[in-house]
Image (tube, rainbow over all chains, first blue to last red; front, side):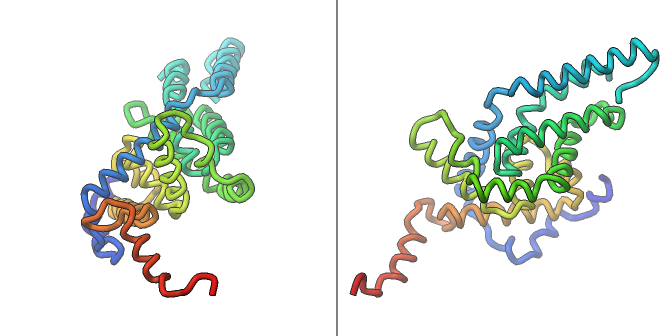
Length: 74
Length: 186
């Protein structure tokens, strides 16, 4: 991770595409749309299948532990 | 971290995983398969997660790797046959923002994957540039570059690219004018 810090953030500016500077209002508008897109997805109810799956995994692990003693998750 | 704590952590991240997976794959159905695979892998590799680091970033890394190794081709096929989820979601909000969101999603789906994923991560998930760079295995400068290109491309697709013009008309007007001299139905 620290290696990545060696890369100057401004390095990207060297690419021609990045010379286009967007109006801050355009950036804001895109930012709002991104949030609206993502928040709409995030607010969808979580299907039961995931909770069932995780409950099963947890049960299996608990059973393994009860049978095999120190067996860790996996 | 106990198994119960880890499980609670996973449950808390499911909405984010689904949202990211849908943004990446363009399909809610694929997204849920992808999330299930991600949860299974996360559970099986729980000992590799370092408590105190971002569980979201760790899970996104798994999800993204799974997507690129197993799902990308399927994603294209599903999109080709069913269209993207963009037309079907967005069930609440007023009509105007509903339409805006549908348009935005169509534009988002047209971005190259490498731009779309970083725009979502940086712009919507709360992940930092540094975390995003780590998840994608590239330098922070590359992430910034991709985000900039993604924004510029979106502005172009949504016709809000003008520096001093937020209205949708300018590019369209220009295009109409260029096409104008052709007599219609002669």
